[in-house]
Image (cartoon, rainbow, N blue to C red; front, side, top):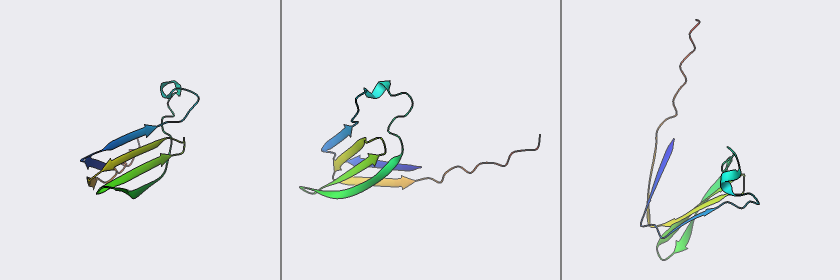
Length: 81
């Protein structure tokens, strides 16, 4: 699991293009992660843009970021009960 904490945030964008409102889409949500990119936003800021297979986009403009991760849980073997 990844944890990303942005600080000195100037912009947060959540764009979910759809003919149906987001909350009527069932359990699909944003769908699978397509890709993400980090670019220069000017004025000493960076822009992190995350694109999903549904067409949804999350974008953040910020000055600093802290990224950490924890290993995925390993599945314990099933007992022969």
